[in-house]
Length: 331
Image (cartoon, rainbow, N blue to C red):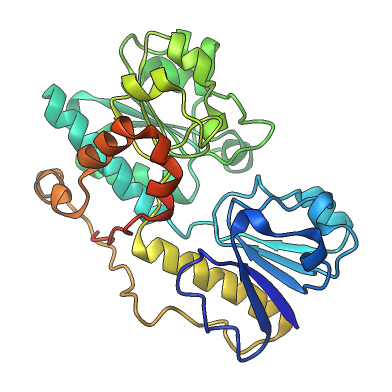
C-alpha cells in the first residue's frame, strides 16, 4: 500500500509507516506520474485534485486535512470511485478564538460593548454555531443566515440581505462553492449599514475584493481573493489583516491530522482510527465571560502584532502561513 502525503501536515510522520509506504512531498509538487501508483493521498489545500492529477491512477481515497474541499473535484472523484474525506469542524474552536480576538480588538479601539452591537453570522455550521453560542453569551444581538440549514430545519434564520441590513458586524463562515462565490459583492455592500465591518475567515473568493475596495464599508480579512497575491489597498485599509491562519491552533491541526488518519484507517482497515497526536493536549472547552475574554486573549493571541507583520511585509504571506506558530486553544 502506498500513501503520498503533504510534508507540511503536522504530527503525521511515523504514524502510518508501520502499515504503508509513505512518501512525503510539498503540497504543490504532487505529480501524475507519482500519484499513478498511490492508493491514498493525504493533502491540504495546496494540492489540486482533479483529472489532471488523478487520471489513470489507482487512488481510492483522498483525505484532506482541511475543512474546505474546493481544491478537490469531488464530482470527478465520485464518478471514478475515489472516496473523499475532509476534516470538517477540526479547527472550529481555533476560528472562534480568532473571531473573539477580532471582536475584542474592535471593541477596545472603538469603545463599544457587545450589548450595543448586532453580529450577523453567515453560515451556521461547525464554526458559525460556536460563534453564535459564545457571542450570545457575551451579550451581542445575533442574527444568522444559512439557507441550506433553514430549508432543512426551519429554525428561523434570516435571508442574507436582511442580516446584512441590520448587522454592525458581519462574519462569514461558509464553504466555497457556486452558491457562495462572491456572495459578498456590491449589492450586499449597498444593503449594509454605513461603516459596518465585514469579517471573512471562510474563503477569499466568498468576497468580491474589488467591490469591497470600492464600497463604503470596513473590513477584517484572514482570507483573500487571489491568494497569495494580496490587493495592496484591501490590505492597507483592513482594520485587521492576517495570512489565512484563523484556524491555525495546535488542537485544530492535531484534529485535522487525526481525522485524516482515521479516514485512511477506515478505508484500508488499519488499526489507527482512535489515534491522536500524543504530544498535543486536547481542548478543554468552557464558557468565558466578555470581561475575562478581553483580559486574557492578548496573552494567547496578539492579533494586532500579526496584522502589523502582514501589512508591513505582504510578500511574506506564504512564509508567515507556512511557518506559523500554532496557537493554543484556551476556551
